[in-house]
View (cartoon, rainbow, N blue to C red):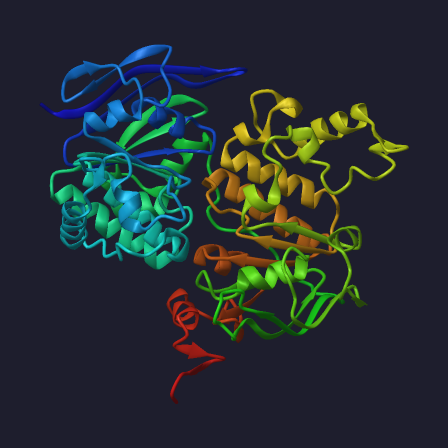
Length: 513
């Protein structure tokens, strides 16, 4: 029997939108099958149908040749299907081991038996090279490690059909390479993998075949080795996509943002060191300066200190020459600062509000949107419609869509629309394209370059080396909280940049010289 899973003519509707429109997907035993599509193309919905979280209006699912109805995730698990969700489903104050056995515990006489579970987990982590500490608390381990815990949860339940939903969105380049090796190892052992992504490099590195969805419809399935990235991106977006950023030479003008000796102390108990260690930098109007570093080297705390979301324990901060110490977040926002935050759910959006209200979060108090403390609904909605159109934000019910129900890419576009439409002097863009597809990335890169050319200063923080190299006019390397080098993207290679990021090269000099 050739196919281990077949989804035939699946249709799934939500209010105002057909998320999956007559889609057929067939997974062979022992292959890595990529599911490629833009944000909102219906990839996660299709996988949620397979995992029993949604019931399709039309179509059938076959597992190992037999037609099945998935009533829920437990049903899917019983049939050997496991899923690593885009936003991990872990209990943060439990240990690694407790998370893995949760829902599949061995109980005898009302007591939890963990010895057998521990042995099985250690054997699995050894066999698949998923080395984890079973006693570590989830909130203390890296995102890459949390993902390994999610994979072990599937293996512990003896799942042999594994769904990975956008598994690399939050990983560093090193962790992505490790994950691809792990996936290949799983397939060698007879597992079959569905890999949802919109990163073409990863599909080329990991997948055997690739099925493409566009706006809820099935476009086709290709053999990855025989298909180039350009062809796949065109299938996905429906037009040719420029994978390189086109921009002219920067023309920097006056300094718009200046930091002098900025420090942020560690919040972890027992730590006395600075997570941001005497950082001084200048960003001028009309340039894109990128802070490049491996996740966890202080870039998050630095940006939070500049924006005001987090503390600044020492040093000075100037916007347009004005000392911003002691100034509120709103003061900074109304005096030239815009911020595309790293965590769009935590700091970027109010997920229960609709799209129109999210688009005026920093401006609702202005005369255009309120009078005598009452909101002017008509102004708010017509402004929202304008931005939705201008920035191509797609959602089921326009301004009235609850933001939490939108796809990640469209949530990101909403934040970018809100921040850029305020015509900032300095824009903090943190991971602006994290988790986005090539069409949306191309669009956002163009927008950032456009803002630069209109005279804004942009401080970019990115973990994507392609983005760092393509978009920056200057690169500042951050390592262990300190800026260790300033590089010209035209003069440094990707490999060399990697050495700087890992801390083995500093300021043009190798360590230990």
